[in-house]
Image (cartoon, rainbow, N blue to C red):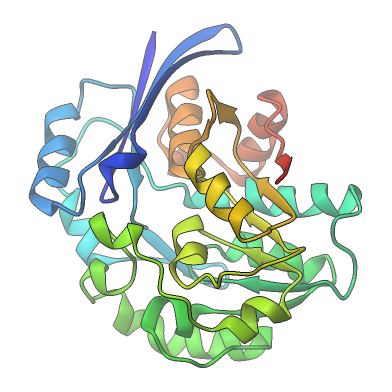
Length: 298
């Protein structure tokens, strides 16, 4: 049996372990949250190095993007620098392929069309997703300044996003990660903010914890396009009258795991590191594994 473990800086309340069969191979897939405890996070990576087939890096991004150009977040890179044997997957390669493919899947299903308004919480974290919506003819509002830095300024054009990202990313990549993304108990807190931009959007897209972070009480008729959700998350969205939840990763026993987990499954299956696979390899494996979005009516 192949073993995949995702170690997350996030809450342990979201932990899950499943055993599944994928293309004739049995997999043990586990998510372990460290509640924002960096020492525990680092220790678990060291402990499991060489003992599992692939490691997922959850609750944090190792890579962020300015357009097609990737760069690492130094604080996260330092946390995993001692891992030498086991492939580490933060999901960025699947974000650029699987999530982009998922956008066109929901367009084929008639859920979006040219002119659909989409709030992407963080374009530097999920550029493939944002690019997919742009190529599908949607109007994209980039929420990077609001959701990552707390600056109440929406970015309405792709060119403005690329310009601002090229200025901010070299600085942001050196900041402590907890300044950029909710970790531990802070993941449970919801502080409604930026309501006019949530209301503007037909689709709210991106990492679920970013989306949840400032979500208003009423999102009647909206579509949430994301990845990692639990049954509790779905109830949270249902209470806010969200119409549809689209998850880009498969559901196992009531839980959709993050792109880092699915990328780790692919690496465990192929025996390769994420950077050793080409974009075509990822698209071919997505088709081979028959990974399609889940569309859930709430």
